[in-house]
Image 1 (cartoon, protein in one colour):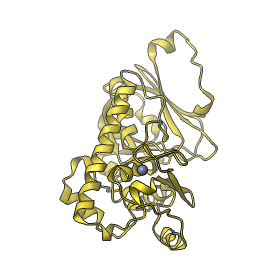
Image 2: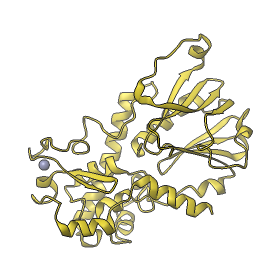
Image 3: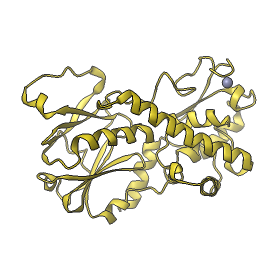
Length: 312
Ligand SMILES: [Zn+2]
């Protein structure tokens, strides 16, 4: 699922293409995508984009008269862009097979923004709301770590007792962090994903705070460099430069130990047993018990569940 660095780069690329441009036409391929009935999505046609914002892992587009389109890509949703000049020339673009099906197209006076979703699970969602107060309802309330001081981070982290993996990926506690970057953050902090927030020392919390900020900042900057002036077409949770995420079975770049994976329900975490868990492989029965109670459920389920709670 696209996390904070990916979403920031999407938003920067969109700002260069659709900010202050008019949305002329919207085409949705099926009924599942749009989760709101009023205001009708067609009311956005003819309106100009006035703002783009990240809300957790969602992208919010603000239009004239305080209308907002809120997009959640979930795991397999991706955005694509084609300039108007190319569209007019009728130039065909060869789509990579992995891109999946196009489920929505937004024609702007500057080009076409397409949403694709791979796989069969239809999870990506669009909500259209009128008024900033309604928009605020989409914020699960997670802390923006890049805008927070250490004391705020410490208070939030320890407000409930959870494993670090869960605390980092719970959108009510921390904003924009999911499965991939939480692995990278915990590796950078050299802390165990199964450590409990209530047992962390002040020094460990400070280390986690710095690691969170550095990981999110460094990755955002790296993706920004890679994307340049182009549109981010290669958004993925698995990047070769990652330290542990997706590197299960390969040697740790710091110490050479084999990167390990814990799999639980739909969730998984990759970690280095030498750098993060004092050599321990996290697989014993007590961990299973712990994980049952305190491991993130599939994050999109958690978010969907909670956003429904907020809606009804
Ligand atoms: Zn290591």
